[in-house]
Length: 272
Ligand code: BGC
Image 1 (tube, rainbow, N blue to C red):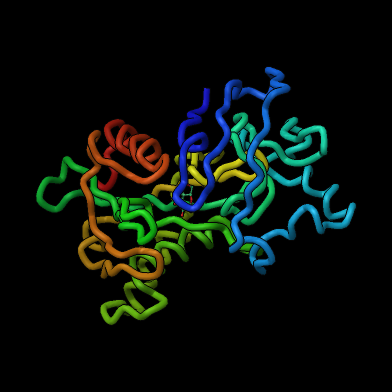
Image 2 (cartoon, rainbow, N blue to C red; image 1 turned 180 degrees about the vertical axis):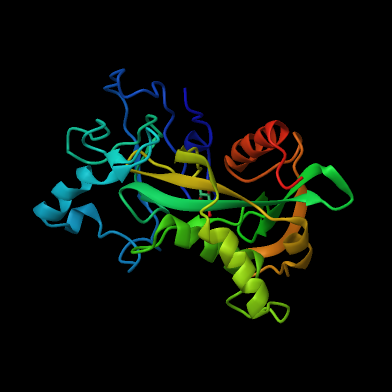
């Protein structure tokens, strides 16, 4: 069973959801009346879908053929049965108490990409560390990830978000050199090791729109890790190397994926 807690909880920019008695769509609930909510910043935005109420019949009919990673492999929502009677995408985990898109731009799956970048702690090489950012919106520690924008591949997003949030590439990073950039690019060119692909239990999710992500792990050797000029940029207000510990607290489901990397590192010794 997938975790379904944050998607039933509160979000600061959202009205309250209606209480959900039956999560699974397989269990009929004729009394279910989800709140309809799409945030004003989404309506009419160039990066977002048109609202379904102003779509043409053809645009509307395409929605149920969008891809999802809910079953790990990419597949069409219609083929996987994640569409409702109106032929609209439907949350693959179940009811959330809200319809509409909330703060999400796309009906169906909204894709993010999250790079977990690790090194060995220079003071204790038995401990793995990762690059974390402090998110400007919630103040929580997080993986420096972001949304896959239209026309972008997951690999491009992984690299772009790391550069923007952890290396301050947009505002300018005076410690970045062409040589260092080439070394970092070479790490991202390899694509990293896949950690997770699929649905995310995110507080922005609704019945009609939800987050999915692909998480990749990249390990830096001691030499490159010592030189990498971390500086917070874009949506990040801080950036740091943090020890991977069972007690660490991270945004959304990020801890689950970091735990996978921590467990794998016990089985294989990265960079030893
Ligand atoms: C974040 C990702 C996160 C995803 C799902 C995105 O906004 O940038 O790091 O995994 O939401 O919660």
